[in-house]
Length: 499
Image 1 (cartoon, rainbow, N blue to C red):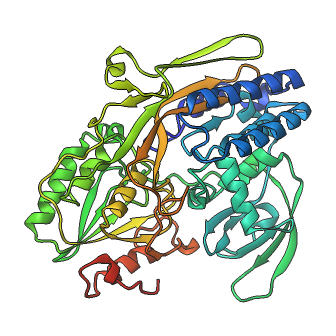
Image 2: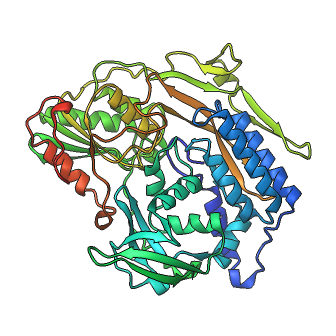
Image 3: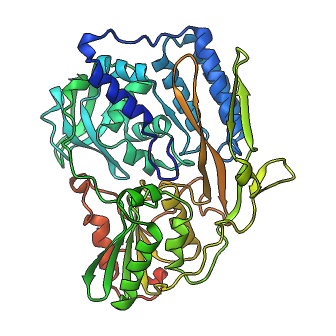
């Protein structure tokens, strides 16, 4: 599942890699993914029961009626499911209706093997933004389509349809499109399209290069092997880093709050941040650009530690941190019991039982950021994107609540009023082998979202451009730098320049 770091659980990827190294696809028969209607129905009902038992509030992001109707449709469609790919295509959009971006569904090893051997994919790598969908690279019959060409439609379905499909096929917090846009980038959309729609032989494209006339053409699907693997690039550092743009302007990149990543680099989050802010104070910085665009979260309470170096006034962070109970359990249609322990005895002592029977974290535990020193009190610009998720989104929400900083970039990928994450229940569905990962703790902020089920919105919207993918000093960065050249003291006085 996507945990508080925003990272997918690596177990399946490693297992599948080992399987292919040991058994070349050409030498081994492909594993069966067939299901009977009864098996598909059993897995569907188990998945529904698990999310209803595990999520603290399954109606946080949807109405009871909406969920009831979605379940009824899924149960009707399950009668026609014949294999685990079709079950995945049924389950993934159903799970996405919960609006819980940390809830994930993993394919089985058998399904991954089948996809690699038999899958036929859209021959385009794509870039999604609020300005449209653009081609990064084409393959096969689409190899001549130039980078930056606008994709207006596939089979008469426009960009808005593709974005909604990405949201359903990937899962997002609330109703936020930017997180799905970032994850669907590159070959992401081609893959999710196959997983939701199945094999397609051809695609009718409507494209436009610059100001040239709109062109319609048909291109054939490609096999998995026909899309070259991306070139290996050095993995970007997960550690916070500081760069001086001039004598009084600092650029602070904080790509992760993950303690695991810091330990892997021989470092620790809190001392690293402490050292950087001591340098900021020592050198007399007046302006700071804080880059959270790659920050998918991490370990609690690192977002609060960073916040305390930016805002001197303490705030109450959470209205509540809650779970359905100390143990969650369900039974499938065959009567088999599935159980998961949420809290051990030591952790259980830190919870209180509410009037509704749920467990609530006792007040004060990591919910009130501790004061820090030094505190940067100068002008602040915050860079955000759809990849700003989980703990990264929490920090953005805290800063917006404190009215600290001018936000530049995209809508944050995590909802402004909190999320369901923390501990997770990894449940393998018995017939299909699909793994459902259900987040079990609801972190509800002590303030309301400005827009329900949406993330922190940028004060200066700057969508990422196809010709600047992977670049730090892109249009959003240039806007941030230009903002700090203006004469303002409070963020509301700043005027957004042209990107």
